[in-house]
Image 1 (cartoon, helix red, strand yellow):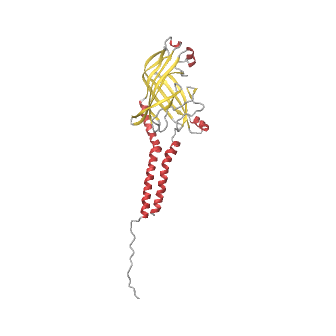
Image 2: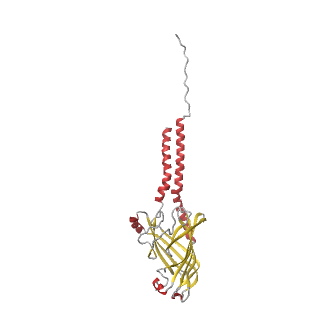
Length: 330
């Protein structure tokens, strides 16, 4: 009976020991992915900002500029691209909507971001765009890969339509969550005007005829939870200028926008809670279950060997054999 039990335990030990690396190196890369139907909204604010008044073409201080960013998964588009891409694809239709203190629109820039659901690498397909202009992204945007590493990444800047390094600056604690801090600087770059302008009748084409150009620079900061690759907090020190042309009445340049854009407090709390819950799910596949199964396999193997040893060396000694002496007669 002991021998049969030891063989069963040995089989279970081999099973759990083999399951441990399979979960980490086979199941995790296939099961951990961004859902195609994800929806997310984020509100950021720049307090005491500078904003251009297009009526007077003069910059003025305003108490607050609000940026509303939405990400909506387009399931129909992702399924269509998957047929030719041969991989799990996510399509995010995003909108960055900027409004002044009076609630009126300053700008709105739509994007379509197409990427691999597992690795977050860009997938190039028809429809990839920023503000209606086709683009070919290189590098990540919005989200880091699962199990983010302590290194620099290539990050796509939608305003400048360029990819530049975003530098790993160290590990920090953000509200009880261990995060990696990344920072990217985009130097002054000539960029296109948004297609949706805040004043009726003004279009990018009409502005181009005046000779006035738009320039932009930013310092982008992200605090990223490394297990999920999700930013828990972000900031931008954002500046825009209009330069030259007849629109400025002889002035060399005028500030179109300048402000320190930060996530609103209620969205910080929501994001941190959401990332904490998703972190647990990822850790189940990458750490908790693989290590748990490995330890369980070792324990079962030890118990199997112990029972096998008991079977070969019984604890109760056998009774000694005795013989009687009988007389020998002729």
